[in-house]
Length: 292
Length: 164
Image 1 (cartoon, rainbow over the protein chains, first blue to last red):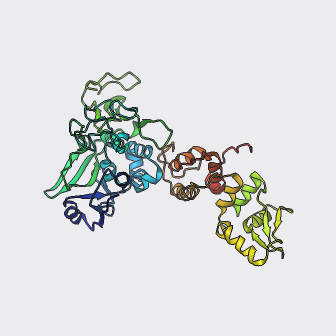
Image 2: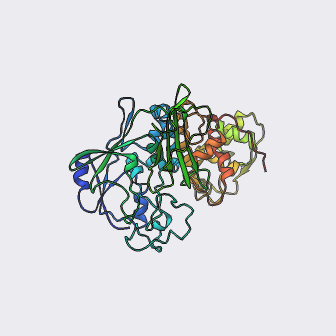
Image 3: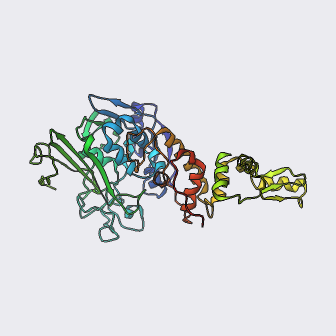
């Protein structure tokens, strides 16, 4: 492991100042970053600990604003999340292990690397680790790799379960940078690999996630997160789906479907205003909404 | 002591109490109290009268007196809640943390009703909540039973496994 400095940010402004320096990285729960440092894949010079910032879950108009520093367990255990956004609680609880969820933060969950086992194996070639090197994963042991959204240069997936639910729930990511604050829809937050798989997200250097906002939704009563994996627990998804249905007087008002097992969590289909909407919700098969 | 008593009741008195040459208990205070609780008249005892006082003290230290205060250890020993012991400290820490989370009503992936206030420590809940702890010996059945024996008062009763 390379030597590095550890600093704890007192507030968001101090974090932004510290995080703007070359070689600095923000540290959340460390459940992915520290792992990657141990494997000598990430080499930060400075870790800026932001786990003491943005640790509240606040009411917005009918929705919730979840601070980036809130632990995954705390989100899943929150009464308001369990009652109004059960899809999110389910998805979080499907991910990792209790120990990891107790450490991992919401912001860090979003920023865990899009990755595969070849990214971790420095005896293998990897375009994400060494841009332009080639990819041994494409024709290697690829059971866990992406089918949809992959490119010639990279087939890694973003393994977050939480993000799949956030995609289905129209969540918005708030980030702060030197030019102030901006909002990024969750479904546009992660990048498809293309020929630059080393860049996972739309964040500019030094930008810091401060919150994830959930708008009100009508799917709480009819929503579910399903995950297919090789073990019954504590395993990444081979594929997963977050789905929700809003009914009004027996008719379908909205359908939300987001797919996991992609390089991003934007495999999302909304049938709001499409052919699926307005059909009777009495067990009829839904018409395909196209583009999937 | 109640947890030890439950274990003795379920699995028998399988670890003798150690006494010195004056019949003072050297190891097994918890088991002795549990036996009284259960109204047992006779329990197995091993006398350490072949040891000098200093040797008995050294043995006690080696046997780690602190663990005698932990109900986990007696239950775990009785039920064979480990094999090589490498993962045991982690299993114990996780079990204690898991029990605290359950008392607070933190749901898990297998919790059927996310809105429930109280969650029982069912077999499925225990396995899911402990899934972050790996045991390279594969002693999971014993570990699950030991945790049930220790934190059983959180549980709705699970069918007892037949003793091997």
